[in-house]
Figure 1 (cartoon, rainbow, N blue to C red):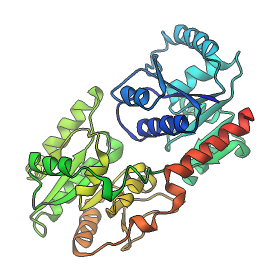
Figure 2 (cartoon, helix red, strand yellow):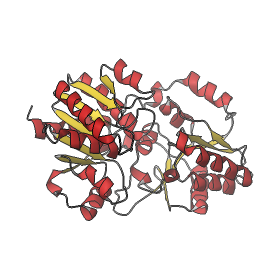
Figure 3 (spheres, one colour):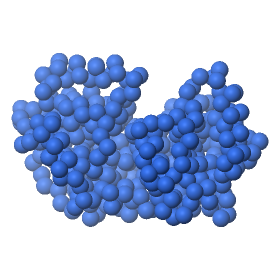
Figure 4 (cartoon, rainbow, N blue to C red):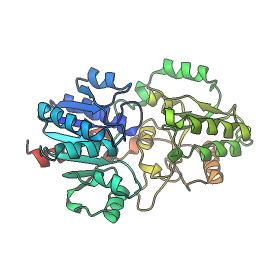
Length: 364
């Protein structure tokens, strides 16, 4: 089976890391794996794992270049002769769907979040199969689009339990990281994700300001890169930290390759996401490293975070609530979080269910 995955770029983020992991697991299972994107720092990993990367502009939203790109992509697909096309973002999905109309290759989409309902986002419901990363996403698209519920498959995001293993983290990296950012003896409250308003880092920074009296050793660690288009937003966050008097207690480390080590060195992970923070990839990865999590939730979500057991749930855009939950984690003790992680959220389960979707369409 030859699988071709499409995404805008290969730099950082849950979609990108999921693509890299699937590429590796497909190769291990004897599939032929191709990834098409406009490029990025993770291209080398795709190729090291045995996959093929093809650089193609499936990122630009410029409608003037779209017809030419569609024609070029159609020719590329003819040459590849794939068994499955899998689009993981909206611009690539539009280009692939239009290029594939005359070719008829099986087409799969994955809806990763609660995108604003409109014609642009509707393309993610046009796959022959539509994968959603949780029940709320499935319910969201059923509510807002005319889509056959029989073609939707819910596949939870999965953590690689071998890679995210407390016994296998790079202790030398952790020591160097702590020294570099002066984290020795600090209470590290981390948040992992690219710099974007959806992560609500404003609430995170404000909560650190709220707890610094009770926990003077607290440090807020923000791990994630800022796209060129988000540099002004990053500057605003840095200004906010200064205004609240916590510029020295907020660390912007940028993107990091060794995410498992980030969870391992953190005392608690915060996901204050405005949309479905409680089933994000960072949540299950932190659990795999025995790190408690404080996260937002969403209506209809089967919560991974269990109050007082592996962390706490918080309200969105509520710094006081987040501050109180940081205090509770600081005062408590959490054990055997990894041991009780639901197998539903492991990489092995995610891969097998994804392959099951492919087999439904190509019968191989």
